[in-house]
Image (cartoon, rainbow, N blue to C red; front, side, top):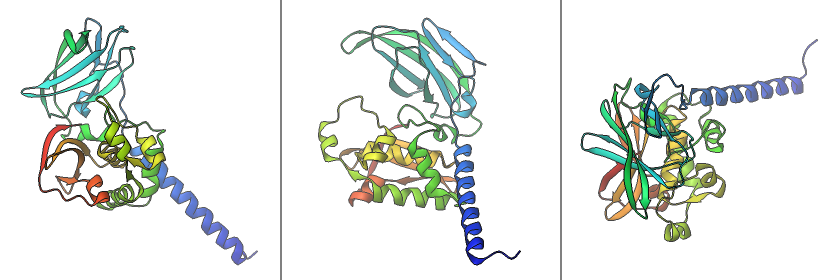
Length: 272
């Protein structure tokens, strides 16, 4: 029996839907997510560091439940980053973004107010499989899971796009167009604020930190190493991204593009 045109059209449409869904699924499957396998555990006092995948550019850290606040510091030579650490025995992911070498991981317990004492310390020698790997995983500053709406949106935007440059362009254009600057949040944000990428996506607004976190989430899950950088744009405290494209780190600033900011000089302070 010869198929009628309407039937052939439906078949083509069904094939296109299937192809799109397959592309989105493959893109999501390609995204990297941290795991605490327990193969390499470093312990001191109440701190456990799972370094099973240190060669991939991250460690997972947890502390036994305590009533006081905790902070964690990662140091390599004269480079260091300090984070808040959950005090409920849950693992959190932290990048090893300073490259291969010897790291020290310290946890500090709150004494009172802003005073903390060193609670534990472990040392770790790291040989990264690739220097860009830390910037392909979620972490505390660029947090997402396989179920995040932002991850699904990135897969939708990049479905069928083969080159990293094309995927970068698709994500960049979307964020610049879809996200409005949140002046209220900018004037009320407090110390310790961390972006929630799905909220930024759903609300369609955010501050520079939110723009950079959403951009990093979308690009990392599309296989493009992306840094979230905090520092100064001229004299303004700011956040932006650096993206690994064509064998080099290239700066992109979706906040500046969306809001027609003219920046003459960027000064890096911290990279996540």
